[in-house]
Image (spheres, rainbow, N blue to C red):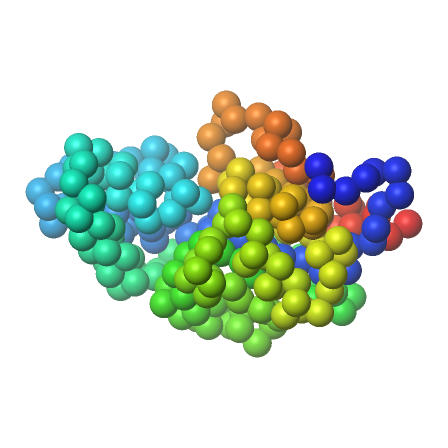
Amino acid sequence: MSHSSSCPIPVRALLFDLDGTLLDTAQDLVLALNTMLSAHGRDAIPYKTARFSVSQGSAALTRLGFPEVIDEAEFEALRQEFLVTYKECLCEATEFYYGMPALLDELDAQSIPWGIVTNKPGNLTDPLVARLNLHTRSQCVISGDTLSVRKPHPEPLLLASQMINRPPQEVLYIGDDPRDITAGNAAGMYTCVANYGYIEADLDTSLWGADFCIDQPLEVLQHIALMQA
């Protein structure tokens, strides 16, 4: 846990992971994977199977489709092919999770700044954020290649904290992967697991070391209110 519960510090800013937390991008990512598999003469992977690899990024999805490829150069070429394929269908079926627009509206209404910290590369993050008109509302967008390190390293979150002008101990980071919680805790932030994200049913997210977990986006407001009390 990143904070002592005996004397909570109020949450004055929120940071979101992108895939599986702020946005449901799985349909487009799985579409890209299966489009690529088809081009290689391979069978499609069922959506229900592939969606659990989404929060682990392009390498995990490429590995799912091409598990036998062990040569690093060959694998990287396939991963780059996947990224190119995905960019072509970047925002066809991607949508907000139910309740997320209302949460963002409420944060804006309360003048609580929020931002995005993702491991997704900037050439995918930036057009996606712009397509959904989030670039005018988000106080910062940190991508996987903004710095030389990515989550689980805390540095991207610390940079976001500087950009939104709030100290880390007043920031809540929400994500759906253990790397998100590791990074947030290392940055000294509050951390929250988005259980509605791409998490397999048999995983016990209470063991990840977050301050709390939520089953849908709007629940976060109740936790913030308790911390302000």
